[in-house]
Image (cartoon, rainbow, N blue to C red; front, top):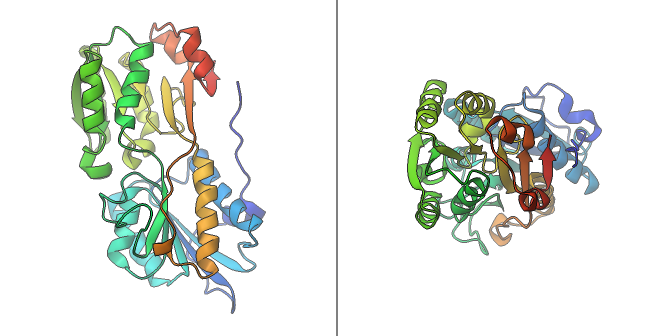
Length: 330
């Protein structure tokens, strides 16, 4: 068992209110940060703390030789576009973006300012880069998950809910990679091999999430949540609805899903991604061109299971599965 360690925001600088600050002092560099999640979630705040800590270790201290302008969008498409325009108008030396919708909004605003993304799924398909080894433009960064994971999530869920014969993949077409299609091929292939009927559930609101999960409960179906910033922001509601309707669910790479009461989550080590993003920002501030910095893929994935939730669903978790887990919540 282990507890998640949240990194303290470097020097306390990012703990200050995140409204636009005054112009940086002469000689100070400027970093824009645009995030697809809610500031109220301590896990998401910890990732920016990791980023700031990584910069500090490389000699960049917020408020001393660099100014960071941070915006949280809460997964709201209108706020994403508004804040993207706002940050680009500040003309920072480099921008850190998180999630596909955020990076797309920034790309619409600038093709010249350097952008380093973190937690983007399909940068080639989204048109952010020409290719992973040579991005070729003003954008590069760090992928959080690859398309084959659509099948892996289903396989893991089936291992601990073996009687499941129907399973849905949920996503928001406005925020999910490829409008939700990016993971479907692997998901449907895994469903065929496991003799499970695949379903797709498209949601754009709390009401649609509630209705979708209620329907799955009536059908005794399972649930796979895509890597989708909208679902990450609404994870508490999803967890609650799944519990009320006895729906076994895997939170894909939503990091707070299992720790918040969901059954299972499987995704990358996000602090590693944000440490990597700090190293790329450092290189760009030192004169590197984003087009020459290859897009990086995850090197480590983490499996987390909530035993209490499994017991409430009447599931018995095999000992071999528990031994594979990076974290077991009791």
